[in-house]
Length: 278
Image 1 (tube, helix red, strand yellow):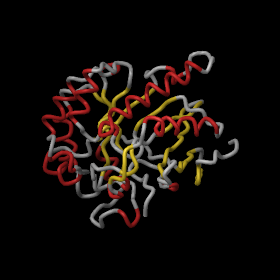
Image 2: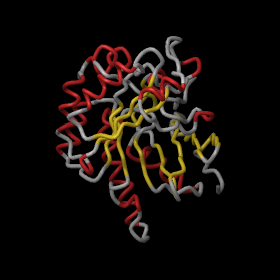
Image 3: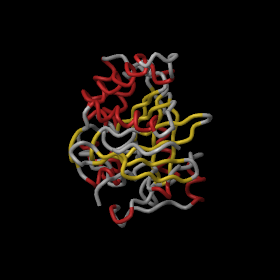
Image 4: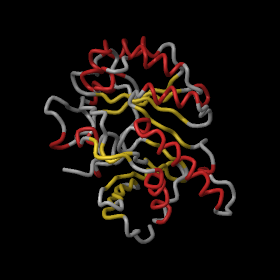
């Protein structure tokens, strides 16, 4: 890796996963994560300092909302990664914050990233279009409706679901109290999904959403959708996490469905672990 840009005050690396803490002009900080992906790297990009969604299993949510990032600050994370010698081949807007809660800046950042690559005089790159970008939402239905209207047919779409029913989801994710699971599924069905497929993210929490009965209810809920289920065991968030949240056993996970291994746990760089305030 090349030298560290001045705006980066912390770099942690383990097994190829790199977590970067970027200092913004006003002194606030955001984290982004580089993850090995085949012969290249995916970059997990933040869109807010903190988050107002308040998901109980997420360190960013427990940090609270500080402020939105500007389009330039969102795009800055891509430039920083490239300057450190890890030019990303894919972008996933799954870092700190809810992208659709900062829709205008997120949308403008996508355009900035694409245009900066085109102006560089290089051959068209992976980030010269939305084809190798994915945006993740916790279920911001208004933002999803706008995403559908604006026709993002090439961009990947991921939904952080984490529960098989409204009762559990509302306990874990306050956004569900505004937009319940029926409205959420209806919104997904209206999206111009790339390949017609939605990536459904589901964090398994011991005793909360990880039983065989939960799996059966989840399957019923997802049946109308063409989806890929991305299953992860809960990533501990240190002192930030409520004491009733726990990682399920390997046996429980194996009894649910096949899961993807979390990357970056030892760096607190895995899903739900990004936070820049103690």
